[in-house]
Length: 294
Image 1 (cartoon, one colour):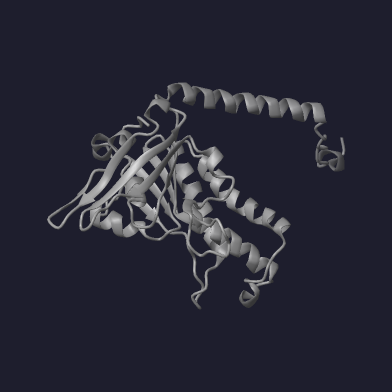
Image 2: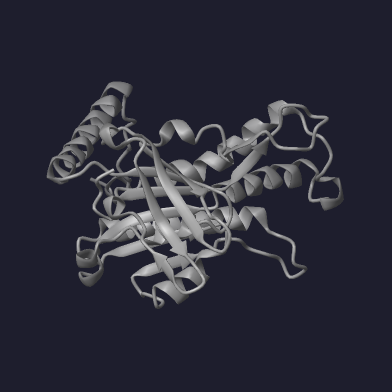
């Protein structure tokens, strides 16, 4: 055998489609077996909860109040993706900056103060990926993931589209765009939303309400609805709405369970989550939410 023959690299044989399908099938079997094992081990199905309400009525407070006293004592972790950029104040003042609650605002601004929509999106995806890695770590107990400000994220995805269509000219971002162009916006929105949905823990998605109008000539709202991207509601397993029942100086915020695929018998139940008067203020939250009973 010549030296030339000895040094000749072995040829790489192309894998045929049948072999590729078999390899993919075996990989699928392995992954689904692991997922099934984890599914059977869980005592509860993962919560996929939406919370809707007007500003400053306790939505973020409920998102921060998902753990039982025992879970808090045991160091259960809450991951909070805050597009609304308002939960940190509540975390510091009402939760004593609990280190097991990580409130993160992904909104990225350039040096001139304008928002960098692409980096905001990437920051959100990175936070979700880090959460996924923490869940995979058996030494880490991630209790839940919260995405606050879903309406703000939808606005960001829309502005990202407008910015790209207008080639970075912010003065033109208010120009009308074709309805068909919104498909690209929905792709960006859902990349973040679906990535969060796939997390193997309880998930909570929070949004504000937006007004509805019966007549475009009449500026008076006829009602209010949740400000979601159209793809969000159908993915929810449980839905909570918050309303203001304050009278005079007595403040009262009430949460109502609008829907639940896991406990339909509780649909319609209400809880006074916060109440205050001239003498005192009291946060009640929802005990059934902490215990995964809804």
